[in-house]
Length: 432
Image 1 (cartoon, rainbow, N blue to C red):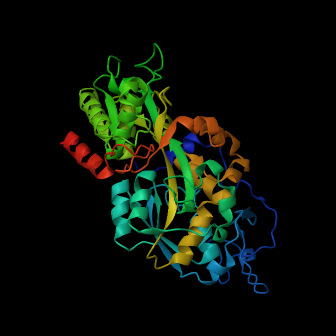
Image 2: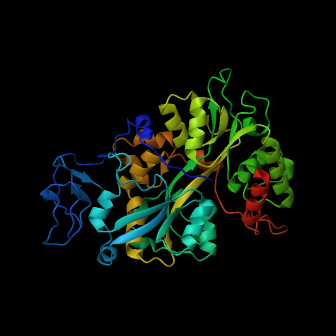
Image 3: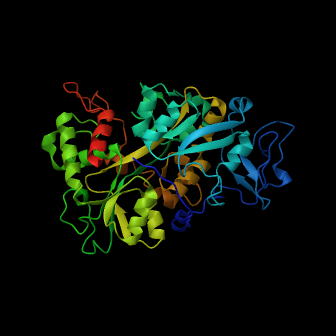
């Protein structure tokens, strides 16, 4: 499921979370230097390299003469072997260089400190990102759980050595060594962030009471009938399975990504019925955003970032995680097996998971950061509370996207589960 691109409208919603210079020393001076032979664009001469030591700074001088503390020091060995560029496949909004909004730029400091130029190819879906990585043209990827296991199984990504990544220690423990980012207890990447897929609803249409169940999406009989927005992706089959898990326990569903044939058929049947309620199937986030703003969609499966953007433009909407729980995402930065620029990619992975950079992308995109230290930065407490970053209980009923396999992910060995390739075929037929 997903992906997204974010605009400066997100800033209007999250303006109170002013962390661009958060965790920073304002006008305080620092003895650290920038990467040897480089200066941050637009900096004063105070950002010149320290030729006496060759050490690399975790801060650069700003145009105002102060320094922003980026809370990160590049791995010296990786820096020594940096190739000069890195080619990355990423979800839109995960790599911002200030061109969308000058206040949000975590690419420029990275390039300044490492001399690794960042080249990005935005992916629109997990399927597309897998295909791009299989081309062998990219050094790494920010992959969701419905892509990570395919990349691992295909040998397209490799295990990482956590000793090379200073940021790894501060990643929330609940995100480490999970089925979608590890193999046999070995990490296959660095967790980026996480979020739950929410139920969005029009507050005027539901003026008599806010909905709290996915039944709005599947059962009908509400003000949203005929104006329901559905995510257009095979992984959405898991959303139907999640609802059946709660409402039809006799089906025996224990994991929405582990469906035997009977369970899978029940989910597809529910989705066929849903077509009578739906007015929109969306894959581009701006399509749903526009429909929420003009009132042609009255309920749907959404991401918090879409809600934020639409509310900033005056949409009369709100969102909730329903009582049945939700599907969700926990993205992972992964290193390509055939990376032409592995050192620059490793540096990027460490950087984007570091406290300052991770807080920047979490606010810009609208998700919970993966680095626990991000929540300690000035201006981040409210954001982490909004996105439940530190609340383990919130995530207990969030089922992160995972690639379905014939080997049932719920541990059953007496049946064969429907693999993701069949999810794709079924969804294609459903949408035909």
